[in-house]
Length: 625
Image 1 (cartoon, rainbow, N blue to C red):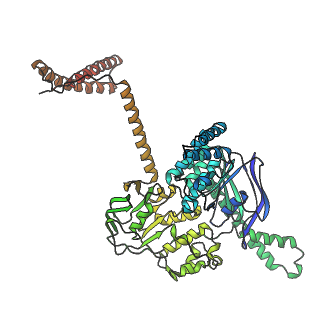
Image 2 (tube, one colour; image 1 turned 135 degrees about the vertical axis):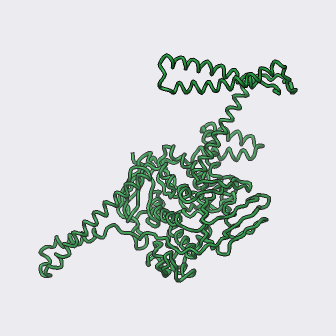
Image 3 (cartoon, one colour; image 1 turned 90 degrees about the horizontal axis):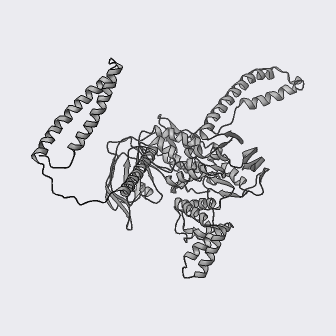
């Protein structure tokens, strides 16, 4: 049963088609991921499906009884509303009952109000629903429900919007980059929740682990058309490669045929042009086919890296507090040439503060930070994504450098450098206001690399980037010769590029963990398993522990006879150990007969029993002198 159907929909932006005459449906229970290059129209398509934007042509229909929830990339709210009012803004009866109950809890003296709230909760069976709501808010780190929306950061707004759409439990959930601004624990919780639910889903995300574990279908938006694949992201990559190989073969075949037809066209007299018009028309169709699928050009990352000296960066007993809250506490580390580390931790534990300490944007409260003279930082941050909307793209780059030196020593102009970053001339001379979110991030990355850094610090570099760009960025960073620090919630990105982690555990504590993110998660799981096993053993021991009898703390003196027995036991144990080795050797020796083998086994069994008795007797408490 189709929940949503899109029939021959098209949408253009300025003078460029995003998609044309595309048709697809989303059936109940399907979890569809939409992938494509930055600027290809993914977010626009989701807005059309959610009914917030009309298509230029075609129509979208949603089954009458189906409810739709939409998470936008940049959610907007009533600025004066509180978080609670925003979360419970829908008309869901159970949500209204929970909101009434939560407000009643704030005024325990109003017994009539509390009684009314409880009656409504009982009538709507909203108690289990309230538990789910609290779990969602806790996992997404949303507290202080009386705070006004206008006081929230962009990341906090996104989490509130995600919480609201999850709480509403719509039949069809449309999510645009749901993992942005979530910490790794929250991403894994959301991943598990969506994978286990029967909810119908369409989403855009750059998180490849998330795509692999949640999606049942992949729809690729490529060259104004849609290509659908039944399976997860790994299956999509395999089938896309096959499709591209097939297209390349067809294009080459068309080019070979075009050469013959071109020769025929050149030999035809103009006066006979109407005689074979069908063939002339076929020639032009073949010419289009021989061009192959269009391309915006492949992103190329190649810049010269400044030479690195012997001293890189040293942190010695660094401390940083915000008020009485410790952010970094007595942290010491010496960076070595080629260090590649990731930083992980919950939101708000001080990861960005730590980066600002390293780069000198913030001074430490105490301790020393000593940077080498040859170190040039390239710092990619979330805050630097703000550009002047009326500024041209090429002007932003030319403000930094007119020419750029590449890794191979070649010098290119700012315009040529922009083309390597998939900004064609038409886009270079357009305003920043026309760029998509992913294109803005690509422009910011370009601004960082144009300075030829030898110490790269990347704070959430993959947010809003398309998967092809992320793959190219990974290839570049894998071969980057300088030091690298990455803060990212993209687990695959971290696994591929870092070899140890700074884990921010809270209260200023930073653990230096040897391994990538998956190694760290496996270590945490092992630690948790050991803790649970120890707790079970402790509980079991407490349940069967007999009543303790007082035991004298005085050391027991052995009698002369016991001393003689102790000396004899030592000799007997040695003899039995030698005998055991002989018996085991005979059992492993294939030359003995069946009867002899039975005797050996029986002797070994007797000796094992005697050996254990002698050991137990020897270990009895006492003071052996």
